[in-house]
Image (cartoon, rainbow, N blue to C red; front, side):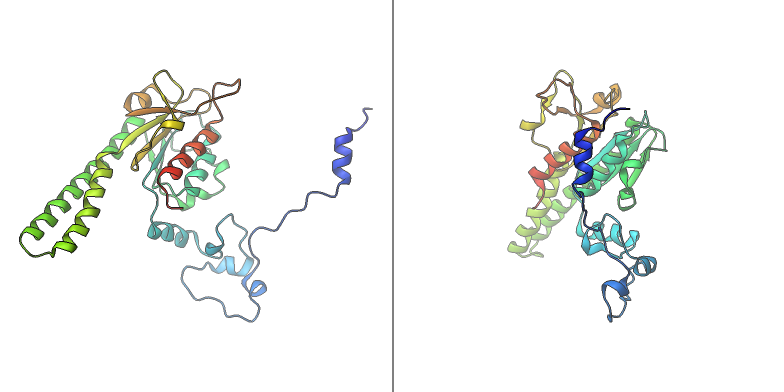
Length: 268
C-alpha cells in the first residue's frame, strides 16, 4: 500500500476551499416584503426557484429571450466569429462562450449542424448562431451583407449631400449626419475576413490592427483551418509562441484574438 502524498494530506487538512455562492435565491428570499416585479422580462420560474446562472447581475431573473433582446438593444460589437466544425472539436463550446463574453455580432458554425456544446454552458442561447454547410457559404453570406452595408452607407451619404445642397438640411445637421454616414462607409469598405492560423506569410497578432468590421475564422484543435478557409481569408494572423509548443489550445487562441479586437476597438 502506497503512503498518501503529503500534499494531498495537507490539502485535505487545510479546510480549503471555500467558494462564494453564485447567483441569487428565490425572489421572496432575496427581497422579503417587496412585491414581485411584473416586468415581462422576468422569468416566473427563476423568480420562484432562484437564478444560479452565469449571467451579469443586471440580468438576474430575466428570461433568455429578454437577455438576448437587451444585448441586441445595447448593441453588439461588429466583429463576427466563424468556427469550422469538421472534427466536433470540444473547443467550439468555449469559443462560443468567449464570443458571448465579448458580444460578437454573430457566431457561425461551419460544417455539420450538430456541434460540441459542452464548453458553451448555455451561452449560445444569448447569441445569434448561424449554421453553414461550408466555409465558402459562410464567407459568401458575410460578404453579401457587407456589400449591402456599404451600399446603404453610400446611399445615405449621397442623400445627405443632396439635402444639404438643396437647403433642406441645415449645414450643422448635415455635417453631423455626414460624419456618421461616412464613418459607416469607411468601416464597411475596410471589412476583412481574417484567418487565425500559424502558416508561412501570416502576420503576428501583436502588431496587427484588426479592422472594426471583420469575420474571424477559427479552426479545430490539431489540424487548424481548412485550405479553403485560408484561401478565402484577406489576412492570416498568428499568435506568437515563446515556449516549446507550436500553438496554443484552439479555445484559448480564440479568446486571445477576440480580446485583441476588444482592446483596439471597444469602449471600456
